[in-house]
Amino acid sequence: MVTFAMLLAGTNLVINVADTIPRFDVSKTCKAAIDLSGNSGRTVESCVAGENKARKEIEKDWATFPKAERDQCIQTAAKGGSPSYVEIIVCLEMIRDSRTRKEPPKNPQAQRTIPAVDSPATHKEGPVTTSVTRPK
Image (tube, rainbow, N blue to C red; front, side, top):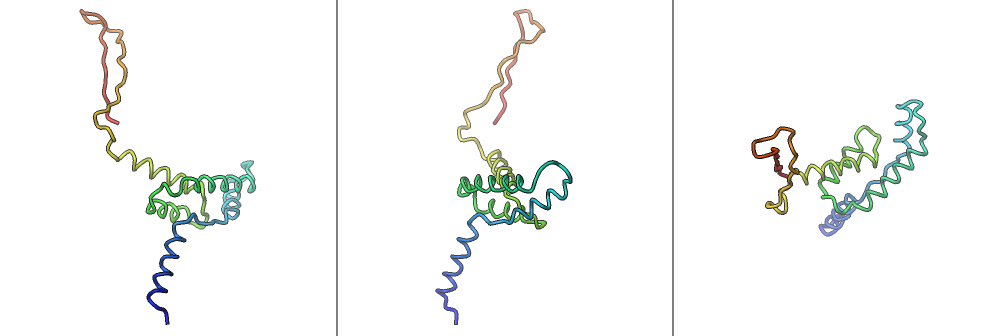
């Protein structure tokens, strides 16, 4: 009979495993990509090397991404049966950039300004200049 404590311990293990970077067989992904692209000059070996480099990059920054975003990108990258670490990086960066653009600025008083540009047109008092302020 399974005890409640065993269920709790098992649940914790599943959560910890889900928080790790998945292991993909990228050789299959790369072979499929090369087959689809035809004679593009890229080899399966160079593709696998690029995927392994992408995985190492993910390892460095993995903990900085929220779990929900990591999970979403893993699911997206694994769809279609050809998972890719490069796809995970692109997904995580796109979500991060979207999220940071939606966040309010840390210093609302700070505004970026575009420098004044002299206009070729002149006014009675001299050249006309303008300055435009854009929010971040």
